[in-house]
Length: 122
Ligand SMILES: [Zn+2]
Image (cartoon, rainbow, N blue to C red):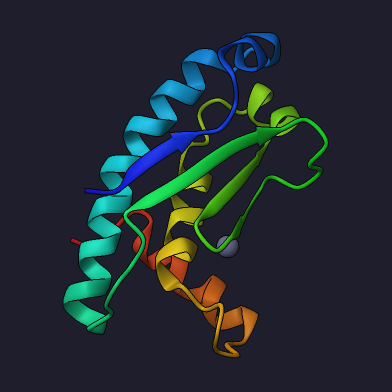
């Protein structure tokens, strides 16, 4: 089971208007990321994937969402107005499980795989 650790304080989330979105996102990401992790174990014979993902909504971040190792950063400005777009955070979770830090993989491959796995193929 993958666990998501929200790095924002309750006060920050309240101020951003993201309290409910953050709680719902956390639950969905935990559920979907666990499936994605199992998929990587089963079909790609990957090993030692992260069981913890940290998630932070950042007021100064100008993109939508990005991943560094097992940390997902989401834009406060974007998610405030797009509270139906949890899929983009699940997409980032695929990147966490791809774990490409130590290999040189072209960006088109990384980004090309993710849509096939979020949502997962049946
Ligand atoms: Zn991506």
